[in-house]
Every structure is written in structure tokens, then in C-alpha cells.
View: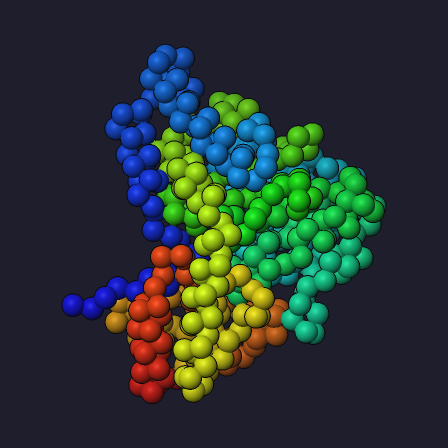
Length: 378
């Protein structure tokens, strides 16, 4: 019997036992509507409040700063559309990185069609981002700067703190937003330390469940709602809260918060082990920079198309990806922005780990990759 090797954790993670237990309890025991005024509703509301408190504590915020959504895509939409509606009547420029997740890039593109100027900042020739490039793109007409913390395809860590602090010093009225989906619970994410007005996070990337996310909104920052209705989440995001998924989200955060540094160090060791094994496979090159998040390693099996190699590995019960899961196998253009193009980009694979990944799993992956380099036709 083959051993399943799951190395696609940047796409989604396996829910932890605590998250599953919390979701089941919310579905079977505390299943009331949190907006109902009776005891069953109160019990459900207490679950939501507890999860909100755990998440707020994790990012150094007050509970009133956390608004639940259906996921990071909605959080990113709410951040960009809501902030641009609130602050973009006279200031029509938005500055983003050119390597954003589709939920930011496509939202920005839609705003562009509706009269906003979108400035997309690319890495320099050395493949790195510099805070000064974002600052220089800002002016008195800029209402929003949006920059992801960790790139979901390469693990590249963008200079969010340096950029936002510089922007706030020169243009204090510009709203700052960061997509922290691949950073939350992996790197320290503190709102004040990042100078962030808006922060998007997701449940299923941190061993919670799918279908839940949150948006941190700094006190005093205005966001015009995108979804309207029954005034849940203080009117910022109407719709009955998904109590089971919120419960799972909170439970995952509560479990992971105390061990961010410890887990980072352990995954760094795993990354070093993986890179050592990959160095012995002819034709394999590493695309992720050395100082990228250890949780994501992007490589190219040069000369072998990503999709073909991916399915070869899948036949051995090894699961990796060719990039962002949201792109459904299509190239997003992110690798090209980092200088990885043509055949090398066509053969890219993303390996993404958790602290539960083992050296044995990485051995199996590398052995199968080596076999694939010999057997798979380009």
C-alpha cells in the first residue's frame, strides 16, 4: 500500500482535531442562529465571540476590529472595494504589487475599469521588492496601498512593514491593506507592527475549515460594505455567520498561536533537508529565494511540463501543485514577475509543508521526482 504524501498545504491544510471538534460541537450541540435572542442563539453567539477574541489576540487587536467573512477572497474584495468606495471619490489611485493573489489583482482590475488608476509594482531586476518603489508610486491622489505579506507561489516575503511605515509617515491618509493568508500563524502578524489598516486572513490555510475568513479593520478606518442585508458583523458583512467554521477557525488559532516561532524553526529544518535532497537531482532548480518563507518551496523540473509531472506524482499518491490552486493550473504570471519565465516557468512545481511534514515524506517525493525526470516526457 502506497503512503500518501500531501505537500500542497499552501492550497489548503488538513483541519486539526481541535478545529474538527469545535465545528462538530457547533453543528450538533450549539446550532442556534447567533442573531436569535433566545438561549440557543446566545450559545452560538458565545462561540463566535470566543473565536473573534482568539483571532484578535493573535494579531494584537481588539475584538471589535475583527469581522468574519466567507474566506480570504471575500476579505480581499471587502478591503479593496470597501476602502476605495470610502476614500476614492477624489483620490483615484491604488498601488498594489504585481504578484498579488487573483482575489486582489482581479478586484483591482475591476476597479480599474470603473475609473481607478491601478499602479502595479514589479520586483526589480534582482527579483526583489523595495519599499521605496511603493512609496515613490504614491502621491496625494492615492487612497490605498495593498501588498501581500508572503507570496503564495514562491514564499517570497514582501517588505510590508517597511513599505507601510514609510507610506504612513509621508501620506498618513493612505489606507494600507495586506493579504496575510500565507503568513498568518506562520510568521508573526501584528497589526500595529505592520502599520496595517486592513488585514485579510483565512481559516483553511491554518488547519481550520474552508469557507471562513476574517478582515481586520483598524479603529477609525471606514469600509463600505460589499454584502448588505441583516446587519450581522455590525453591518460590515451581512449574512448569517457560519458558526461551525468560525468555531473551527478560532480553535485552530488558539492551538497554533503559542508555537509560531517553534513551528517556523522546525519547518526551516525541513526546508533545508528538502533543498539538500533536491540539489542531487539533475535538471531541478529552485525558484524560491533563500530567505523565503520555509513553508513554500517553488522548483522547476526543467524540461518537464508542470501538469504532466504533477499527474505522474499523483499516480504515486504524492500531491503538490503547479502554482496557486485558484488558478486551476493556469499560469498566473507571478513567476514571470520574479524573472522565472518560459520553459522554467512551464515546469514549475510548488511544494508546501507544515510542521507535520516528515523527512520520510520528503524522501518519497524526491525519489519519485527523480524517477519522473527520467520517465516523464516533456
